[in-house]
Length: 129
Figure (cartoon, one colour):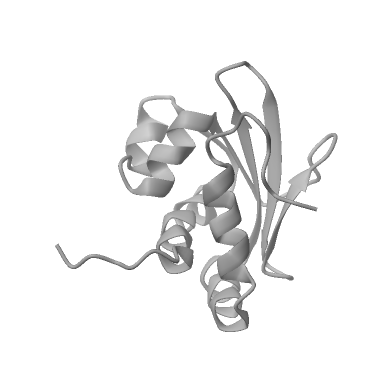
């Protein structure tokens, strides 16, 4: 099943995470770095909600959630556009949180580890600017 969701600009980034996690070494590193199960709950511009389960505790996988999200260590709740900015490195998770654009349920320390995972799993060449 694809992690992409129609109407969500975050879909390509979630696919990048899925692609990155298919590399056993990257997956193992992400699990060691985060050691948590995260729910990423996004709302798109049409008001539609979609959740993804990012398992960085056991499997090192990401799946689109159908129905009610399962129990997780951390739940991140934000708008699709803010997630895209976060994934692109154009927004800072702390600033989004402080401005009320990112809500976190559960272990806040585990939530901060997600930004490092985006950087690790980003298949694009890293610029040295």
